[in-house]
Image (tube, rainbow, N blue to C red; front, top):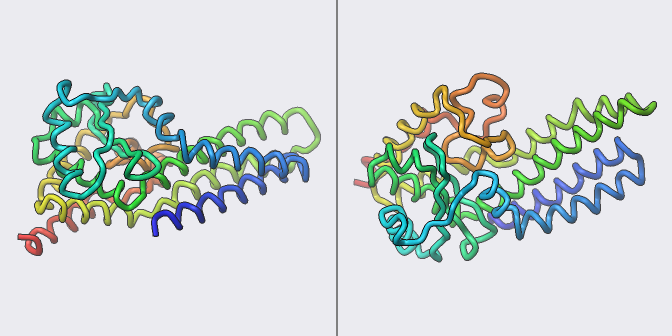
Amino acid sequence: MGRSKTFIMMTVLVLIFMFFGNMIGGVQGMKTAFLIALGLNFFSYFFSDKLVLKQYKAMEVLPEQSPRFYQIVQRLAYNANLPMPKVYIIPENVPNAFATGRNPKHAAVAATQGLLKILSEREIEGVLAHEMSHIRHYDILTGTIAATFASAIAYLANFARARSDGNQQRGNGALAILLMPIAAAIVQMSISREREYKADEGAARLTGHPEWLASALQKLEDAAKGNLLNNATSQTSHMFIVNPFSGIPGLARLFSTHPSTEDRIKRLRAMHGELM
């Protein structure tokens, strides 16, 4: 099911690109946008995970470099009957984590140094179980493709703004500039908030302890207040377990793909009696 949703989203994104290409450059612009969108789909499928990891300066970890972190991922992968993903640490004090890749065989999990410092081993396991659930449901492919296209749409908005300043097509250029941020938000909103609830539930069932993730989420939410993750962008915010902009007021919160942390914690605590 996750793969079919991804295919549908990739098709819709091609159509969005063609629409804006037509607005900016007519029929020729639409044809060019179609080719660019096809190229982006190819790039997103095979390389977008590497791009995101590079954006956040993530460094791959070997077992001897961070044995506790690596062993937790290894144990969860075994329990979930999933291939062992690559393990990365992000040199960043603000605690957060995400998973990426095109499928379970080509997956990676990344956590910041801050997360590994402030969370207990059980809380870390709860967070990583959440990310393993995203891998199992193929959310990682959808998320990385959405991030790539959202970034590309933002680039198109800048291109349309520059073009509308230098010719007579100001009407179409101005309309494109107005609509492109909305389209970028639609790309992000295509990543259903329900997927976070499902990943939380998957983590609770994988560990057998929903309170581990609930406790971790509260710590992560508290740490996000007033602290912004370095290199964080609205185009990739949906990939993290906690929205990196959650502590920053403004429009970034309006387009959040995450349900409220308070809601997620309530659901996890309600599961405690069911699993015990």
